[in-house]
Length: 230
Image 1: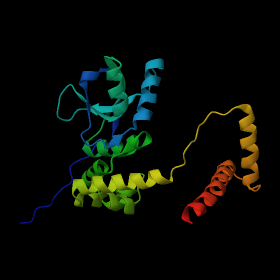
Image 2: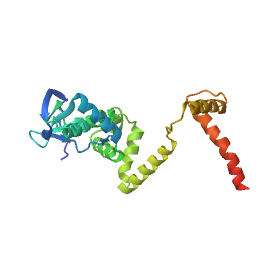
Image 3: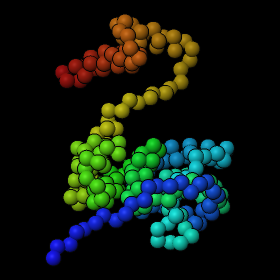
Image 4: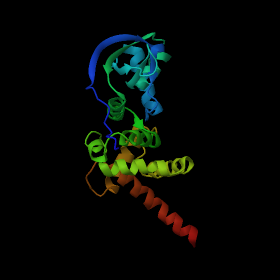
């Protein structure tokens, strides 16, 4: 006798409303993949310390701990508000099931900070267990190909992933523009500006001065290099 498998009944998300919730009653979602660079985190902390204003955290009643709430958006704000000594946090409470919670986690958290790829891959893995690739790609920022590529990270050892990400970051760092800062007198400034203008050969563009300065450096270094090779 065959059995017919039925999907569990799903209830649409419903908004409970805004309320102040003690920080000790707020738990981060275990699949949160979002991290924030240290410099941006310090800016956010300075803003919160100065103004005390922030968007409401998005939370849901914790599915496994009565009286507790699970954070779906606002993990960084919660951490910083705790550090600043806030006893309660403004929250927007939603009643959502596990699948909707993961979808909110995968979309809302992309608006601030950056994702750790391996943790993002685990989140997508859980979502792929509950819906097909095409439907998921229609709901998330990634295309179906990007979802497949991220999901494939789970097939690699964690140490290899860390090494590959470090190598990629090092390569990206090599091509990032640099800002050079140095102090000159007004007379030196005028002299440098004139020389850079002449060395740029009248070319236009925001990097005109950078090209002119590089041309001056090249003009100085090439004779020295030729002399050293003789």
